[in-house]
Amino acid sequence: MTSIDVHDLTKEHGTVRAVDHLTFSVGPGRVTGFLGPNGAGKSTTMRLVLGLDRPTHGTATVGGRAYATLREPLRTVGALLDAQAAHGSRTARDHLWALAVGNRIPDRRVDEVLAETGLASVARRRVKTYSLGMRQRLGIAAALLGDPEVVMLDEPSNGLDPEGIVWIRELLRRLAQEGRTVLVSSHLMNETASFADHLVVLGRGRLLADTPMREFIDARVRPRVRVRTPDGAALHRLLAEHGYEATAHGDSHNDPEGHWTVEHARVDDIGRLISAAGLTVLELAGDEGTLEQAYLDLTASATEFTTTPAPASVPQSQEA
Image (tube, rainbow, N blue to C red; front, side, top):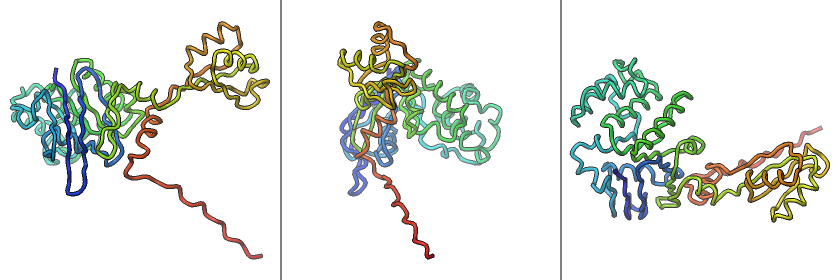
């Protein structure tokens, strides 16, 4: 199957290096989340892969070939970079039909992707009457038009309603299950966590991480377990005997409303210990860490735009 391969890729705009010696591959059969702060180089990298910019140095290929050398590119790569790309005076059907003709794609595919993206009922309306979410769907329809082996989407959830967000999740998973190569850029961490198998993370144009998503989280966020029991003293002794560090919150030794936090632990392991010891448990819950926590930890020093807390206002003294 076809992969995206970036090797020593560099792009400079004057004195600014937008992409800095990037090397990574995006393989088939999984959804790869493409993450990074504003200005990290994600959009520039995608444009370089699609031949919309020329690299200063290095290569970006699809299936071992530069995008510009593909005879019928939409049959190999489907991409959404800008939901506003479709001409507003055209209907959605005419927009897709023009793309199909230019790439020798059968007319039936136009109706198929309109139905798949939920636009069949509005296919003859002019694009300028579309909402942002409808334009997003049209851009995704264009990306799918050639039944491509590679799909690249930049912020595909932007403007979609809750039903649309669920739909795009399921679509991305299905494309990966069909063996396609799927690269999705997004700023929405919780959303990315719902569909991504693998992550490529950039910061200031450089590669910060290229790893399976679960490994990315586990390497940066300590797993914890929350336990609530009426016998906190026995729980504390049990955990200490097995080398676990536990912290009491509230009067956890005597008060069942208090709880314990067990660091560097998982629910399955703590649950087995407690069960074997015959302790009564009122609550047992795991905190495996989130993609957002891990991402913020990694990119804290690679963010171009950061905020600082506003100084607290000092109330003026009132005269008697």
